[in-house]
Length: 203
Image 1 (tube, rainbow, N blue to C red):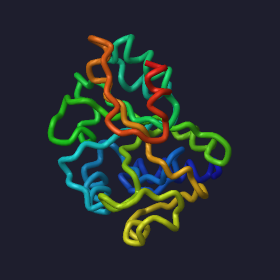
Image 2: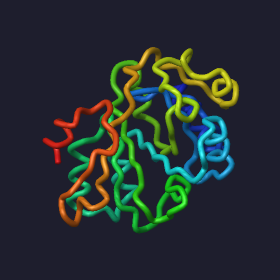
Image 3: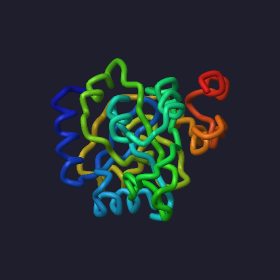
Image 4: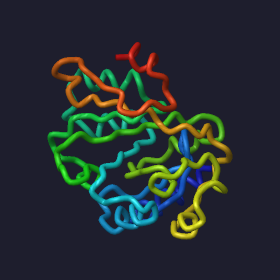
């Protein structure tokens, strides 16, 4: 992974393209969060129903916090304790930001991801553009830990492939923080890359 790769990634996203890229967990598909055509193509490649919500990924924590100024202090602190890392956090979204990521309920919780980018993936931290992202697998199929494990129809359907080598292969842990600001409650929706005990200790 090089700075030139990241610049190409940004250009692809800027025009509503769909990219196959490595994160800190599994390979993902990414597109511009405001591009209806890009989101439609991403969902079609996965065979995923367009009414299912997905997440927005930021490549640095400060970009996520700046994009969501409505977050309360307790929720922002939770993001700072758990991110970057292999978690997807469902946070309140009263301003209805990134509506294409929210499925049929604009203003509902928004999934937020900030990957931990180290080693060969470190240049991706230079990515200034948020992406709407989902795992690079057909809906219901196994997650891909290498480009070779990504379904051929997906590889042939994207506009850009970034190969980051073999990844850990465990998807992110999903944590619902939609009521955390009000009452401190949270729920682990899916256990994954970050253990339950680590999440509970942080929150």
